[in-house]
Image (cartoon, rainbow, N blue to C red; front, top):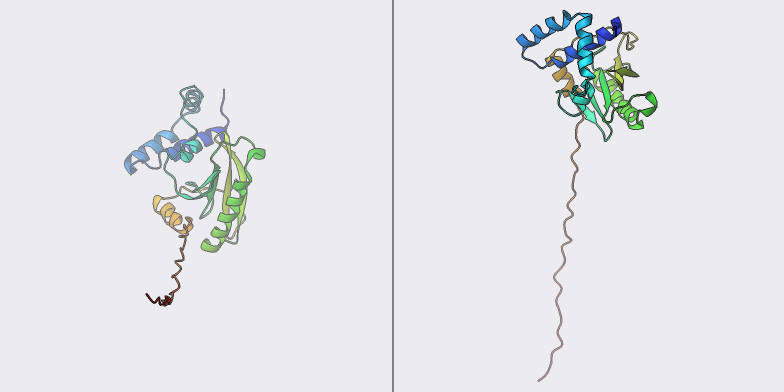
Length: 203
């Protein structure tokens, strides 16, 4: 099996994302090693991943909390996390909690969450609009919410490696704020002490 340039690029991107949380020195060494991987080495790695003892795909590991992520929101069927290789500032991806293989399987709640986050991005980051685009990546379908500022954007637009500090700052801006339920305590009506009249009995 010969990998196409696009498949090589995707595999390397997946490996890069898996080493982002390593200590800086180890991370840089790992990045150099990934960059130097040959097509043949990647093919061997892919074969190992397809074996019964293979590890989960990256998005399954993110959903299960095995890979740290900046989760800004979620609902019963999806999680929304910051993309570590964003196309524009505030790029968010929505991952269905149950793996989706085709666009027909995407739950309606994925689009509902995407629209909710789009409004938040436009309000908090002053974006002109957002692009909501589906993408088949690492064997499953995800949704991209890409903020639009000056120039038009698409999935083919160039990406940048987000720094940890930038991701943390963006997380603090876009994370969902849990509303605390206010409990109203009703004061009991002050009842006037009523005088009970007792009939006087003559013994």
